[in-house]
Each structure stands twice: as structure tokens, then as C-alpha cells.
Length: 449
Image (cartoon, rainbow, N blue to C red):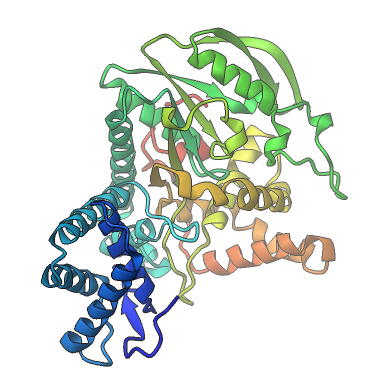
């Protein structure tokens, strides 16, 4: 409960956010410190908190907005002056421990309201430093012949981020039995899994991946909507019971036979691919639903490392609007579906509502549970997408503008069209390395998918 009749109305948090002042939070922190050294008197903690509040007013003025650090400094000083030396020492130690925890979280993933704000800020700063934070900036890079330099820099950034993720996994060995590469559709999970594997193998670890896509039920078992469209995006389209049984058996050293799913026929065969984990191997999973608890509930939390990948792009158009992450991934999937799943780009566009519904229900709510975040957005991919896909968005706008059942497809088509219309297209993709994440979508990769 916020304190009454106080001149302090607000405080400034460490991230710069201004929030209402609450004396009770001070009293609670003092009480926790006191109880750690044998104290039991909450009323006394409340009294000390009142004195802290008066000291803040005396020090910073009646209308000041102190920072969290200012308050903590005054708490320490007040405790010492009031003769609570042991509590003061416990409070100092608690404060140091919290600082250390914040530092660890900054290395892993800082996520608030399911959005990794610190990561997004880092991406924006990187784009600004490289002149590719706007459509006009990318156009200038192409016009000046610096496109290959941008490709090299962005690919190196992604490579380094994957390396940091691998180091985080190594720091938790030997407890880690499973590494989960999770993220929404077309974020680049498979390539990231391969690259993490490469980095960890340099240390002598052998990694073995399991293809969760093979656990889809037969397509005829999937529900259809009014358009006759199948929903691949829900985790219920997967045989979760079989997945968990196989995961537990693998981690315990048993041999399994995974299914095989053919996307072109929509059929699966059971007991096809024999698989076993040796003692020196770690199970590696890349899956749209890797963060969905029921997918891996047979494996204890302390034995799992969750790496989350998303297209956290920070590029603005001439109106100052940022491209949506999901729109970036939509274009990737439109390209990949055309050669991998025998779907036309407009079919992918109209199917995308399933993708987004599933992401919002089964992926986004679990981001706070991840151990590390990788950004897979590449500013140099946008001109490549325009050359291959731009023609479809005006067509989609025309087809679906007056169709009340397809307004989601119309809105997406118009939004992507409006963003991409002023961007210079790039047909030639020869600047992309053969091991680029983007080769997962454009083709020509050294990796086998």
C-alpha cells in the first residue's frame, strides 16, 4: 500500500520508468533483511521505513523523485544510524546479491510483458550504427555498393550471438541433458540448432537432434476451418504423448524409433528412424512449440536449456513505422513454403492467421521462461524478399479487400506492401554465405534441412 500524506509521489526505477512511491516496499525489504539475522518485528521495520522516508525528504527536497539507488543508500545509512548494524549488513549483502542477479539476467534474457526490451534496444543500436535502421538507409547502402559489407556484418553479429548462447549452455554442464531451440514460425530455429551444435562440438560434446515435425498426426486427423484449411500450428497437431515418452527414453539411454512425416502427402509412418543418445551426447530440439510445457514435461526443468530465437528487426519505413517481426517471418515462410511444402505464396498469406493464433497462445506466453534470446532478423534480407514476393501483396489486397472472411489476409498484405513499397529490391543473393541462416529460406545452403 502506498504511503499516505507524503510529499514523495513517485520514484525512478533502474530502467528509467517512473512509478508510484510505496513506503511498504521499503519496510518489506528492511523486514526481510532483519529476519535473515533473527529479527521478527515488522512494526519496527515500518518505523524505520518512516524514518527513511523523512530522510529522503530532508535530503532531496519535498517534491523530489528519488531513484531506487537513492532510496537504498538512505536505507543503509538510516539502519546504521538507528543502531541496526546487523540488519544493515544483511541489507547490503541482499542488495549486492540482487545486483549480481540483474547482471546475470542482462546476459541471458530481460523480458517484460513478454517483450525482450533490452535485446530490442541492442538491435536498434546495432542497426543505427550500421546505417540500416530505415528503408532509406538500406537503399543508400545498396546504391553505394556496400550491400556485401552489410551482409558480412549482420551475419557476423548473428554468429556471435549464437556463440554466446553456446557458452551459456556450457556453463551449466553437466546438468543439461536437453537443449531446446524454440521460436515462432520461420524464425530460423533449424539453422540456429545446427550452428549451436557446431559450436558445442568444438568442446568435444556430441549433440543429437530430434525432428519434432515427424510427430505430426496424419493430416486427415487435423481439424479444418470453413475454408478447408488445415491447422499445422497447434501443438495438439503433434503426438505429445509419444514425444514425451521418446524424450524420457532417450535421456535414460534407451533406443527409440521416431516416426516419419511426409508434408506432401500429409501422412506419417511409425517406427522409422532409429535413435539413441550415448552418454556423451545431449538431446537437441528445434520446435515451434519448444517452450510449450507439455511438449517436454517428461524432462526436469534443471536438465533443460531453452534458447529462444525471433526476428527482432528494427527497421523503419518512411512513415517511421517499424516492420512487424511476424511480417518478416511471413515473407520467409512464403518463400520456403513455395519450394518445401508446395504452397503458393498467397496460400501461405491466408494460412498465416493460424500461425499467429498459435504463437500468441503457445509461444509468446512462455518467453519469460527462456535462458537466452537470439535475434535472427537480417536487415539485408528485406531487399531480397521484395524481389521475390512484392508482386503478391497488391494481388492479395485486390483479392481479399472485399472478402469479410479474409480481412486478416488483406490487412497483412496491405501492411507489408506499405512497408516495402519504397525499398530497393535485390534479386542477386550471391552475397549470402553458404551457411547463412537465410539460406534456410532462399535455398543454396551447405546445411541439409
